[in-house]
Length: 328
Image (spheres, rainbow, N blue to C red):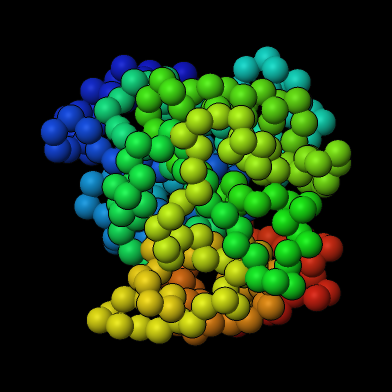
């Protein structure tokens, strides 16, 4: 399983490697959580960050040995890998036994953010993003526009036919959430950790849903918790019908704004040559899906080179019958 991570050595490595540049502070710090079933998309996420940002650091929490092994072999740039054992404690191990894989990964989100913040490295914001997020442009304006916010939340912004879902799943999507690296942001993070430890399941009970519905309450309890005001962020199957997509000057636009990131939620890699769309209209947008799948095919080939036996394909049984299958 490997030894314990020595964060002093990691900090020294970062300082000497050039990952942290500029005048002592860097805005672009991201983190995500990967199991072997999300490795393919997680590496697409990493490549999208690498393409759109010059200076950033991505922390990846590896849930299993397979995810850690593949990411290590891929030698990802500007990336720090963390084994789940380095974040887990007794209370997490206790709930791990009773939660499904996706539920446990949701539970870990605030813990992983807190783990990184405790390293006391010089950054302004740390942003958790789901592994199926893809950046199409530099996200820095998000943080520059609201640099004094403690927590930046991404609204689902549902289309009208999905408005009923908001009451169940929440106003905000926990697939993109940023915490400012200041003391005043920590009470909200601790509160979210405590709530996720108490209850975090893939169903709706008593006004709760996973790690996500708590964010509605967070925005009412704590000061400095704001909705992201930058347009073009976290466009997704639940709101994409609101937008017209176009290419201008080699950039993808949503209506009149540059697309910063699209959330490929419900996108599953079924095999080497097949993917499936599970939620929303299940519509293929060539302008979005073709470049994403082009990068994905490159990732599949590169992983095949370093580990020919790895198979991270998956589609949940409950979605198989109604999915829209597309040739990769």
